[in-house]
Image (cartoon, rainbow, N blue to C red):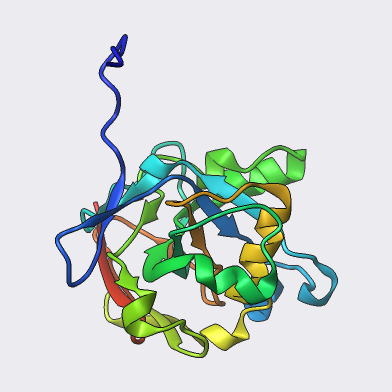
Length: 228
């Protein structure tokens, strides 16, 4: 029997729709600038960039429906995304086998301290301070791929206080879900419990305390979050 020197942190989990089970979150991989129009609004040419990734800690994932406005910033942005939850992993996963690894899908917000991220970029430093802070990944529960299939061209939207800010479709991703899984697995051994935030469409903007964010991927899930 293992005896811990200190009490270990509680595991991070996501509810699974239609069951009483929960999905244990291992790691959170985030693909950057995966929609062409978002890349352009951020000042980049999507036709010249290979895929790239950053990570959030598992304990950035939250399902409380609240997003505490983080310290040290005055410019926090929303980024609405579909999340992909893996039941299987491996290295060098072939693209045509990648979807076999997927357990299910949900929706999430990649919340970003944009001012701190921008400062880090200028200095050539890592982005963790802008991306990997506490509560930086509000998420919905999951729907099993066995129940809904694999979304390809579903609509993805985000409303803030009832006004539409982000509106696109999943088929506008530069790198598809199978391509993303295959690419990450070249550099990491993917594990059961890993989740992938698959990128955000254009329309990212700042939030303030009191805002209500409602995001949805049609047929996948809906997420309502209040900034507190």
